[in-house]
Length: 135
Image 1 (tube, rainbow, N blue to C red):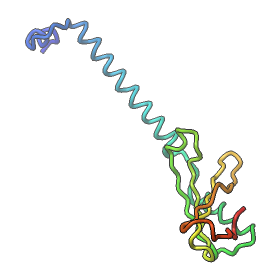
Image 2: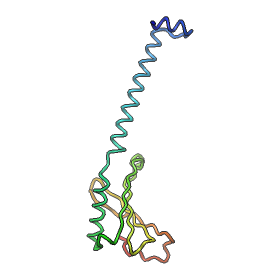
Image 3: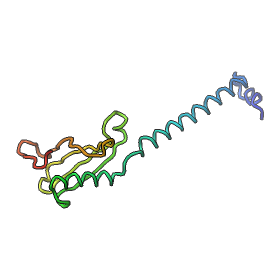
Image 4: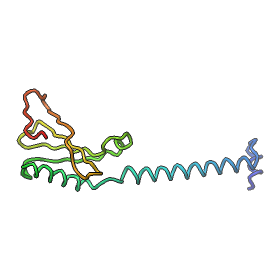
């Protein structure tokens, strides 16, 4: 069925030329949204360092400070949405076996390929703690 017949049959006031323009606009908009979404996904969401490598770097940093491998537990998370707001997307938390109620937080610097201390979280308040592993 031809477009102008279809337009007349549906009672639309659009001419064939206007209908063609709307379809082109819809197609171009859809393709643009798809390309932007793909670039966003592949550029920000999955484009990060292997978390195992970051964990190994953190463990090496702690061992260099004089601790043994069994004395601590390291957890590494990557939050891609933090990168959108200009924050560090890597969150590293370290819990030492001799200080179970304190979490030590670090950030991974991708440019320098190193970790930096970023804070401490005491579970039951910080007044009675001496923070043995603070940097």
